[in-house]
Length: 210
Length: 204
Image 1 (cartoon, chains in turn orange, purple):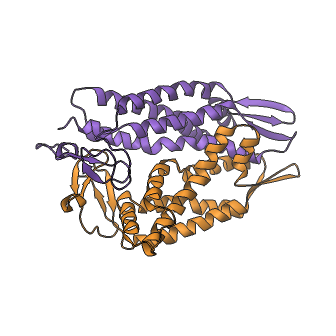
Image 2 (cartoon, helix red, strand yellow):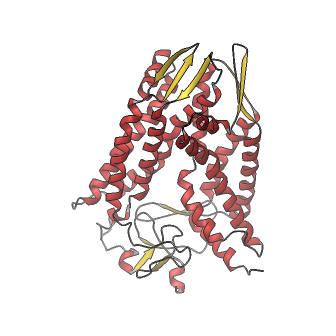
Image 3 (spheres, chains in turn cyan, brown):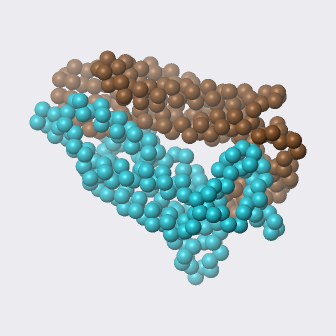
């Protein structure tokens, strides 16, 4: 790998070779000149920003999993569910495939994604890698298309509109945590472009192990 | 986006791009030096794989619409509803907003996605001049809308979890939920397997 190739980048969608600029100014996008595919986005302190936002999102996820989600009352009967019951109930009805999918899409994969990015950023600061960064980077690129936090949020809203006509609904703390989590997750994903992510992984690998 | 001179791509410069970490390597390299992913200049048999997954999803879309997606038990009386049946029920009840959301997410989006993928595969194998820029845009839209079809499955999962009041009112899932989730996954993988670079190769 020679020096010139380090700044070359091939567009993922049309294979055009692009000379990457050394510095991308804050909040400007680098687009492919031929197919307009967005390649990288400048951010002044992406590392600290993403780390802080990811920690926030992870805390919100913990809140969303521990407290109750929505409660529903009809004819003096009250039922309160937590977030986990959205898939455990499917599991008890023996729809294992759908249950596993819902669990992965709304909870497991977003959490794994955020944990991975946190670990990668932390290993660029400290001289140790808890898990190999390259492995985490590959994992992140594979799970990203399958994270559906924002889709689930829309699903919750549709279900709520549907149920308000049938019974009294009250929204609990876990619901509000997820309402903040989903847009935050989408925002974090938009800040982490793969160009920057692999720069971090290179940094993490370059730092001496000890 | 007209290019009069032959554009310099990775493939005609003797380079291969890693799909995972986006690092360039000489075209003879078999595995990426950085992330050890298997390298190939274009996704092998991309159109065939996309098409076969597309056909699978079309076939799965049939049980997704025939079987009930959920059954509601209200005071001992059980009513089963399919996806289309649910939309009609919402329209009759006057909840136009939900009807439109469910219609878009579970009928229009999957069908539009299937047509888009079929069109992309057709254009990729056709030899005539094609509009690369517009097709790439179409691909991006297809990839973006993919996961939004899952809304219906999520709605069902929440309703099933929440509405469990025994005899008075309870909701059970139906087989269509499994079939529909499989449709979404198949179309998503199909879109992911489609390599837009083969459209652009026709410029060179």
